[in-house]
Length: 96
Length: 96
Image 1 (cartoon, chains in turn cyan, yellow):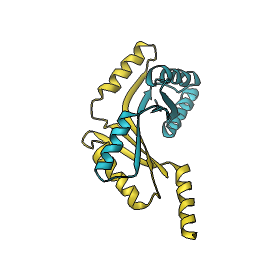
Image 2 (cartoon, helix red, strand yellow):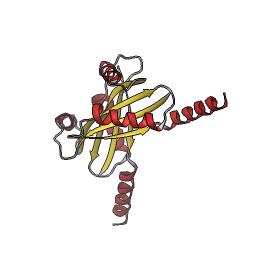
Image 3 (cartoon, one colour):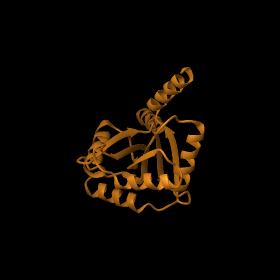
Image 4 (cartoon, helix red, strand yellow):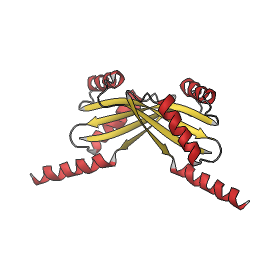
């Protein structure tokens, strides 16, 4: 089991109505001087070992399904604590 | 100018229909063995110096406006590169 996080944000040149709405709401509530852009965060629990092929597949999935790359940018990163677990799993598998 | 990121995720015990939909779609497209939970990511550009008071206000804003703490958890973190800039700004201000 590994955990991979995909962060998707609207590109800087793209209007972000949700972010604009949040910025306006914050301002009205007295939290001024804060400009907000809103994106998405996906936490993926991946079963089995996190091989390079598996990571490539996740990257492809992020590119085609999770983000719309015309208007959004995305970042894929593996959560370290789970990498350690995966590594331990791999070692156990190897020694079995 | 400082950048603060607020990450909002549905609590583990809460159903996550968006995440379920994405999980199903990934599976149908051949990306199997991946379970997805979907949350939100807010990037806040904060004008001026990022004082402790300002950070507390942002934490309050995240708690009351950005996240629904009944069903969601949130994490606030300051982007390091911008902290450095803020610190430089603070030093400049102190030495002026």
